[in-house]
Amino acid sequence: MVISTLLEECLTASSAIASELLAACAEPSLLSSQDCPLELSGCPFPVVRLLQRQAALIVTIHNAAVLGSGLAFSDNLDVTRVRVEHEQQMLLQRRLTDILEIATAEFYARPFSAVLDGWRRVYADTRILMFHVRLLNSPLVTSRRDSNMDEAINDVEKTVDALVETLDMAIIVAGGNPVKARNKKWMNWVLRLLEDATQEAIGARENANSDERPTKKMRTGINDSNDDEGTWADYPMFCSHEAFTPPVVNPIPRLSDYSVGAFESYLTTTSPEDLAPAIFTDLANYWPAMTSRPWSKPAYLLQSTFGGRRLVPVEIGRSYIDANWTQKILPFRTFLSEFIQNTSESLRSKPLGQSSIYRRGYLAQHDLLAQIPSLRADVAIPDLCWAEPPLASPASAHSDPRLNAWFGPAGTITPLHTDSTHNILVQVVGRKYVRLYHPKYSNVLRPRPPENGIDMSNTASVDVGVEEGWDTELEAESDENTEQDHAQSLHGEPKVAFHETEYWDCILGPGDSLYIPYGWWHYVRSLSTSFSVSFWWA
Image 1 (cartoon, one colour):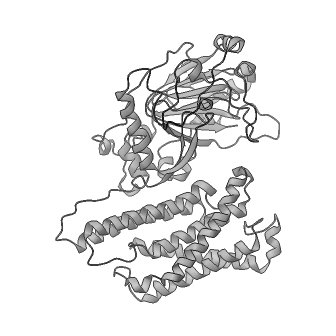
Image 2 (cartoon, rainbow, N blue to C red; image 1 turned 45 degrees about the horizontal axis):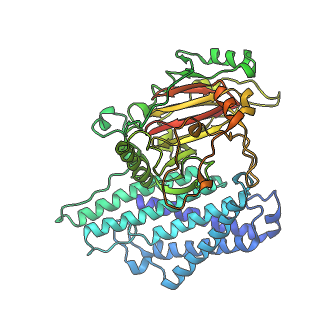
Image 3 (tube, one colour; image 1 turned 90 degrees about the vertical axis):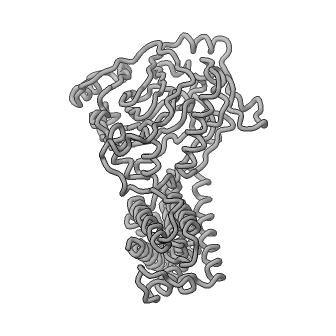
């Protein structure tokens, strides 16, 4: 059974954590060294020692409850033989929570790039241990034979929700685990096993209550996916309604059948200041995301995210430059229901000119495809990304493209900004309006000053949506908005200069790929429900 494999993976991980940390505790001076071989540099000895003790305790609990039971996993284990004594369980959970809070504080205290690997490891390993404990005490391992089938299935689903959250937070917050044996790839493998074990558990409960007709059956699973386009033909697509469509004033050239050699020749023979944006119409036509595994169907995305259980970071608000902007981590299905489907209904019911007043949520600049490998298999890096751009120095080298997902309802925007790399933005679902300005107009666009010690110079002070009259009001989430929450429009000479500045613009539809040269300012606005993938390379 899959649950036995899942438990074995957890036991192996917890055992490794216990033994590795024990070795580190034997030489505590190493913890203060940047050369610490166990990815624990910078972590205080008391924290490492406390985590090691919890890992060792969990291994003991596992062996006593499962291996020592003498029962096959096909049997229902006695609850009293699997669950540890209540007081011991509560103390274990409290200590793991304390360690997690200490590690979490490190992520809030400094930029992610400055967080030491040691703290990333402590955070991720603590999450793994929490997952192991929760699994041991879950209805996937223990069950009540006399329970109602619907209640039993609900118990399974609630537990699985918590288990997915436990590991997904390690992927999102810590970026996985610097320890290769328990990295992001391993975590996704464990979640895949959990998905299969969930299906098994529900099937077992249905068989045990065969005299009852199931009233609810969960359909999840990467395993259910196939490449037959007909599989998804009858499922509804995302709403394509557009509240309004900006006029395209200076269209960007549209190209096709453009070879890597021709593109590289253009990059290397054209001076950097003369590089210009272009739309390629045929780079993504063959992607499964556009055909047999359609991202345009909510049902497919829900299946690919473990029934929508996988967590995603969501930006809430009109723009990250607004005072009331914030972020939350939500299950994918919650993001869909609250910010995609609800927003689509809101836009349908509002007349033109009132579409700016609604609560917006945007899954923006997130490496979703690394977090969820099944979605990564639905796209391919465009060949043009392997062209060698002009190098900044002889020591520079071509880097693998960095992928980011951008998914949100109509009206979600990325304010006018620049990227530090070349960019190909591929539109997969829906339509987006994009406006671009040459780097030579930076003074007119007025780069923002530092904010709270963060360099914001890659973002313009000019708000395109406000200047064009597309965003006249902030979304009305509450009655507490003040004047300072409202985006400020330009006045006098700066306003005249901005409106006289040359720009290029376009509307991207499914399959279009926009090349944005390094340093070009660009403003992006979803016109309908929209899903894009950006490829940054340098």
